[in-house]
Image (tube, rainbow, N blue to C red; front, side, top):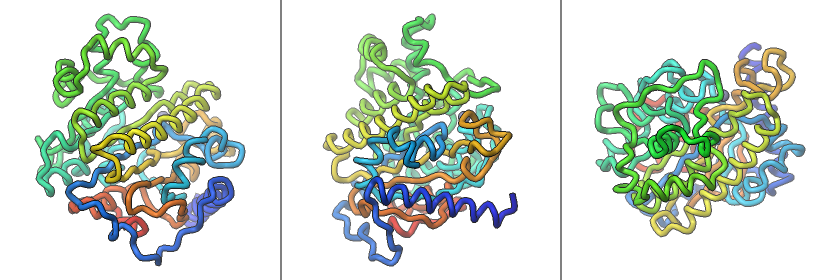
Length: 383
Ligand SMILES: [Zn+2]
């Protein structure tokens, strides 16, 4: 598809998504010419917190925002979108692998690192800009990531940043497998690490979260962690459990949570894919409620929810329906973003084109750091 045709198809998708939200979630069409409410927000910059959630794995509109898909997103449609500014056209022009795409979101640069290797991002991450420019301690930037393959996401190999300036990374599955040596069958459904081939799970070293820190940082005993984990149904539920502990015990100002349950679609079972979407919808709502109820976060936290990328459409013969994201078609590249919090307009939808790389510059403008190497631009409707 030619570039102009792809742009038109992406804009068409964004407009239909916008119309679904206007009719079903009551969102109104935003005007970029309104004065910024953010400037009037009562929260001063040093106290602001940001939580970024990647709505991971990739889902198509027909299972989410289209009329026939809305039943899978009751929390987004009824609770979150009416309280949010929503962008219906966030285009990812990078590589559609989960690790490399998440790294691109976190650097504001389309990263080209091997998706299936244990490598750090090449450009500085949002965590490094945040910590270096604002002189924040390592306890103030954290990542909770779904797969052992994400163990290097917190810190780049860039020579002006990197070493010691990144985020601390918790891999809940790694923590659980350390807590249950021998891989008890009770936990297999929580430990499945990757839904794609080649299967990749690196031997971990370096920046990963060590088991003894379960008690010292999260204030969780190994026994409590194990018994609570037995009540959970998926890796993303395990991640949210860890996120809540982290918010209560450490309260980082910049918290990045990567979800991944939806990617079970690669296994080819449509019902599991739908279950993943519904669970992710519920977990996003649970996280928003936690933000409202935790004193360290309530009233001063901006929540960003966006997918790393989408999923192939049905009409592309190479895509095999809902199962993969390998054709790079318009539906798999045209994603969305939801932003909520103090100073953010509520129930407003924008359909102009933004890019995945605009996230980091937007966070920079909000929090007061300068992402010098990022390619994107701050999203003016949020500032
Ligand atoms: Zn995938």
